[in-house]
Length: 186
Image (tube, rainbow, N blue to C red; front, side):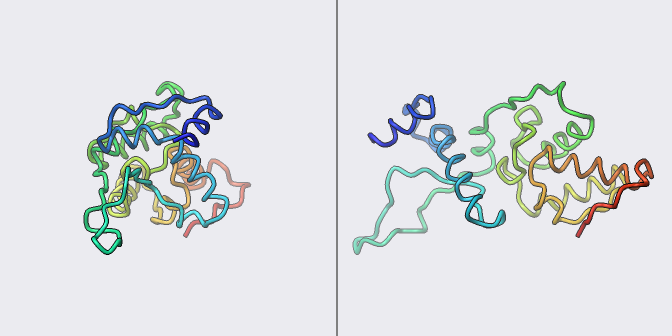
């Protein structure tokens, strides 16, 4: 507990230990999750960095001391959305494409509203998964006439990155930027 208090003090944060439910724990340890993920990003490929880290008070053990994996908690999409902080960037600062992407994500991810999604939020952190990603790629293709692969979302998981790819591909397909080299897309 001393290490936790000193780490929070070093980061200039305060501890909120009142809510012991899943949502409260996800909110309480958000800064630690971000710190762990930043460290893992330096050491692991992007696909190996976990999207969700679950804080636990203790492991439930079998009598022989092994972890009972069947009872480990995992938050559902609604709990992940409730633990998310509202977007820090004002919606007025979003480009048209960023608003478009935010709206599509909010329509497809259950329990998530567009005002919660920020520019640097990762699709998989706000509750998205590969099946929802497929529907988003389909929606983009249908509404914008841009053919993208699922890899585009995996390689550009933040709203800002994905929207910038959409802008770049739109400009290239419209012929607005004929001198540039086309983006390499899978």
